[in-house]
Length: 371
Image 1 (tube, one colour):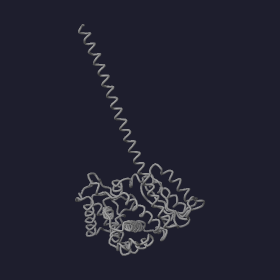
Image 2 (cartoon, one colour):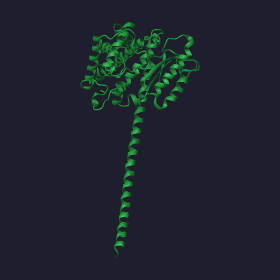
Image 3 (tube, one colour):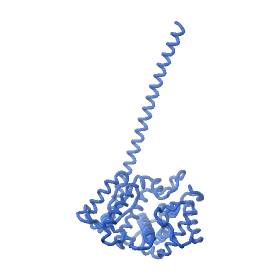
């Protein structure tokens, strides 16, 4: 055999072996790909299953409110990819010429406010954010009651897991945070619905946000309503569990870190502490309607006048900036004119925020833009 034939045979064998190796490699990659695809598919199925369970839990909770308050029909609008269908369902639900009750308004602005509210709901749905609105139904509604409270909740981005529930409430990295520090997703689902239901019940009983020519009047009113809603949701949680739970302390800590979200309208810890310190037996034995009245009573000593709210606003924004965060509100004006921050009040807000941070994360707050 010539050396050329020998080389040719060797090349043939090498090529054959290379083809075999490539075939095995492709087979291995195919198996890995199939298992990977199966894993992704299974994860997707698991998430969908959890979402369906959460939607059932949401409906069960709303059924409670429908039975407890027969004057109002409570309904869940689904977010995410289903938001367009939710908007269509809403329009059929409330009927033709419905009225939004969340803001006081003259009759000739009813239609404009309705359109604006529907657009706000569309944005909230598409953005997977939680909110609630109260309507008086119009003509030929699908709703069976004269008043409708619609609540938007997207389980996948809100309560699908303890970590997700915690992330929804705090705009900080949870990397490296032990799972034991997260809030309980089931308790959080109740808290969110109780909070949003309160807004509708508050508007139904006491009216929407009143008309005013003052620049910050709406924000002043919203600050009060958000604090009372948190107080009511916490009271409902304590009533259900008949004790001060781990969730109680964690949700207060999360609200106590609201300034770290650049958000000053949900700094509701003074009101939540009033509920936490109230007689446990009286809360446990109270009806839901009685808790609504109790929240109003407990909040009254804390209520800020318009001028006091403006001062709080300036102090809180100064604290947010000193914490290295950015004020979340996009609309102008952010600051009232001719009011300066009170150093002692700013110092108190900073101290409280850092204490809640330390209690929740078990470490000191780092003064940087990316804690």
